[in-house]
Image (tube, rainbow, N blue to C red; front, side, top):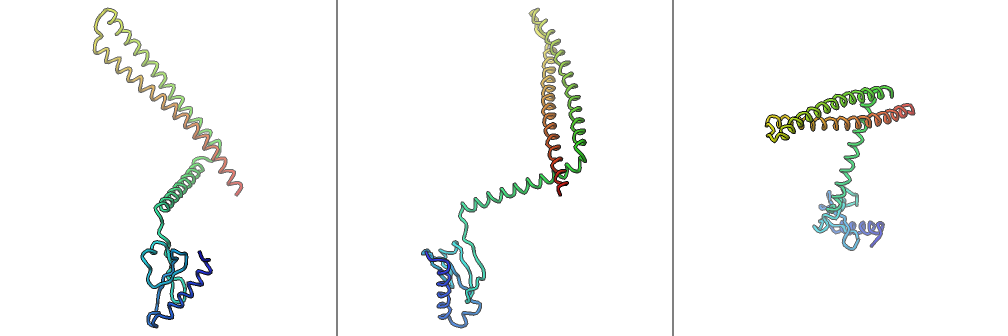
Length: 215
């Protein structure tokens, strides 16, 4: 393998020899291809062999000045890596934009830590009130179920068939019980998420205030 200096020196000598044997009319706006051969040596020719078209080359004029460079064609592996890097970069840009939007919204929504605490306490109080209502409703529904089931049991103790209407009432009540239980669980989860969100908002708000003071 020859050094870059030797390769370019050899390339210039080859180009000079090629120019000397060309007719004068052919030197007008002449373009040559400079590329590395399989042996690592620089080759210069007026026609680029197709076998080297994808390996990268330079187009030069008769003085050796580079007119343009053509990069080597990338392998599927290189293209896959480039796509992965581009996707990761796009994700980073999107995340940075999302953080900026979050920070701007935080500063617009609150003017102090106390504002965040007031909003938090109000939301949590409202959540507790909703839970109290739902839990009261659940207890009432369960009492109704127990009363209707007791009626059904009375029929069974008498070896009588439970009326279809009573069975439907019990089934409907059980559906309502399940629905209220789901709402209670959803409200509790929402309350927990909100508490964590307010905690995060407060911490970030304090960071932004410190940064603004530092600037």
